[in-house]
Image 1 (tube, rainbow, N blue to C red):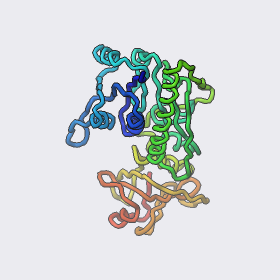
Image 2 (tube, rainbow, N blue to C red):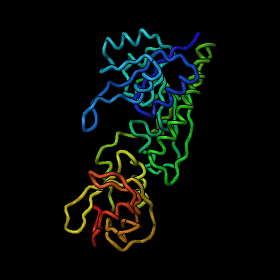
Image 3 (tube, helix red, strand yellow):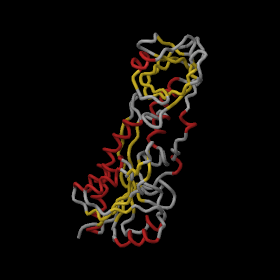
Image 4 (cartoon, one colour):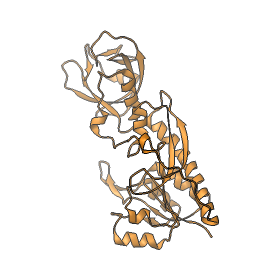
Length: 320
């Protein structure tokens, strides 16, 4: 008898996990994702990446507005799932996650219990971690606290951005979902108990949602911290600062890539250093931040040489 699976997810990160289940011939009887919503300047209706995949592969699709809606609960129950997999979706009510007899399993983009919460990829880099990873665990009441089934580590280098870590964890996470599905399927067929590892709450740290104020650069901080913030918010939502270019009006700047040079500076924090051709550097507490990719408000993201060809940095210009 084939184990019946319901998959829940929304963004591109979740597509790799759904795809690996489909390609390995698991019986995905339903896919749950968010409703279509207007987006962009034209406010045209936009489908989630998971919906696009489900439609393309003729999978049964559910798009509830509310996860406690009685019609949705009845339709979900009618799918008679043995197990549910959740990847980058919404917080589930107990009536949903407790429905399958084998339980509901979440793929989380951190090495739990570290970085519980909405933005584990960003905060791992912002906090200067040297490794991250993915975890599959069985859902229970408190968010991201369930017993762990499997984990896989991924190294973080001094230049890794949030976007690059996202893509690495997406690939490794898909493999871990497949490993998890195989283990649960064996338990489903043979009745063998799954081997769980309880989370140690004393080791927990949190990764809350990123807000605009989290993205503002403080040039009085050490350069390593600033560089980590830039990497941890690149490409989205992006670290930002305000440019005071002579007597001109303040301009908002997003910074996507940078390097840090350690030395003892003798200039004010935020002061810009440039030849207006090839480089743009910023004085901070303990050195210089060299900016390599930048975006003026309302303009496209570009490399620093292209930026300087079209924008003149004046004497004593500063980031504030």
